[in-house]
Length: 165
Picture 1 (tube, rainbow, N blue to C red):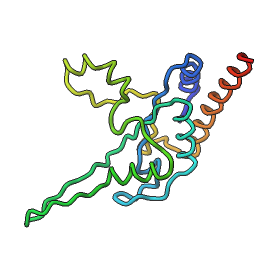
Picture 2 (cartoon, rainbow, N blue to C red; picture 1 turned 120 degrees about the vertical axis):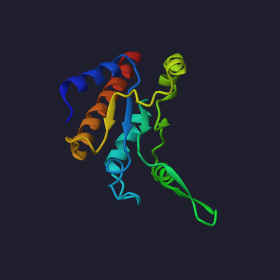
Picture 3 (spheres, rainbow, N blue to C red; picture 1 turned 135 degrees about the horizontal axis):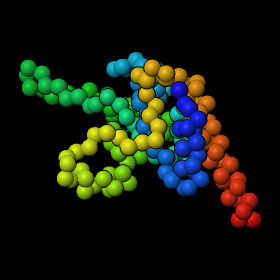
């Protein structure tokens, strides 16, 4: 699923102090797919994403979940908080997001004039999509790949500390 070119591109960004953006799906990736319910959390992946965010990566929740409002025949309005619950579960487990179903602020600022002129841009500008609908999706392989990226950040920190001393 992850090839050497992608790995090398990400390593180059780390070395050049460029921000890495990762879009992650909720159902089937962060949690086992039990929609509309929430399945068990993939704790290893969640911890890796927390670490990557700590290293400065932007983590974007990219999901089809939405809060749905329904009105009964009597006019009573109820909400099915599917998106809210997904965000809450992640937050309760220590994972916060830089954006939800949209680009991070830096990208929106960069594309601001383009968006104003051409209309809303829905496509995310990210370096990595974690999506279970990808035919080659594999949770273990994804975690191994992200662990290697974390190790590159740690190595960069060790090198920086060594140079400073």
